[in-house]
Length: 493
Image 1 (cartoon, helix red, strand yellow):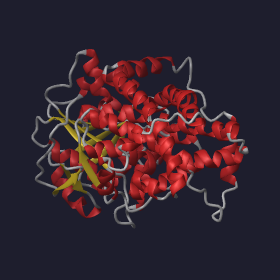
Image 2 (cartoon, rainbow, N blue to C red; image 1 turned 135 degrees about the vertical axis):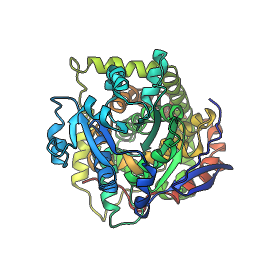
Image 3 (cartoon, rainbow, N blue to C red; image 1 turned 180 degrees about the vertical axis):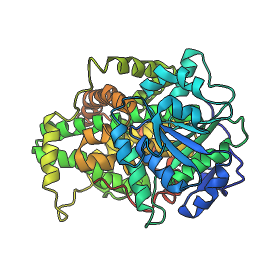
């Protein structure tokens, strides 16, 4: 994959350009003051069907309904007998007012269909879904998984429909919570990327941007559907979910068993440090801000940890990316989905450290802030930068690299682990993400424990990876992106 030159034209919204690492990318700035433009963006759309009620479905259906008012009808479509019917009713979608119906009927009656079902359901039902679409319909996705599956099957989207994507950079509960907060706090919301795969109506761009603005996205970045699913599936199997899971479990054991810390102190030095000071500093000041926050002696510890972790992050992210781009990971997800009835996903917070974590969280005190540990910071930043470099090597847009490697991790996901632990972070995500975290987290844990930490212990670390750190282009990219972060932090009730 090579770097693509992306641009778009919109007659409804105001396009701006930002410079990221010397590259120009087009964006759209959102806001509630733009809601009066939504009827124009959705011209020709009388009904939007939101299909599915998983992580994204409830948030997107409610946000769209609230933003569009009477301009466009929003209807939720679920399978007959779905366990989510009652939850949808409680959110105000009902059969009586024709805002809740059977999936295929809603698809056939809608001018824009947002498919927010599980990836396993995509694989099983895409043919019947395609058959229900009317020519000229706009098909919307919030993830590129279906494109990868179609390519693997040697098939394509129907040629007589638009195909667009809007991908919020956070889990569904945050998309809804920050939208609600945005009613009183200007700039609250979750940023999103958008892509146009097919435009048969000539209105696909404006409809996609209208969708993103209606969800409450403060900023919308452009990508392609293929680039999105490659970076998203790879990212959640690396730094966004699996990587951080493997990092903190390996660090906890190292601090307890190698350094002799108590269980509580080991948890604070590992998990609490990552979800606390490391994530907070990166969110506002980038990876370079973490390094600059350290004393001179601590910077040496950071450099050693960074250099020991970086090669492992690069190796595993490259393997993950190959598995995703070849279709192997998509096939693995589909096969795992077929086994779930027989072999349900187990809990991932049953190790002793997560019990300790419950105790640590219960004892938190505003006066006892967790210090920034240079070793933890170096390990975390080393693997994070390795993922960014792999995506850079593969030609992804800088905005996408920043979001899928850094911003989504520290702003959207780590806060959930900080609030309630790793299971709460992972299991609020899609089934595909949950499967990937369980599959790949042990690989990060193993290689850090078997390779990185022994090199640090034996003082055989090669600092070559760190030599490129201070001048890395990602720092400038994150500096620009930090100016486009939501005006409030994600909160977890």
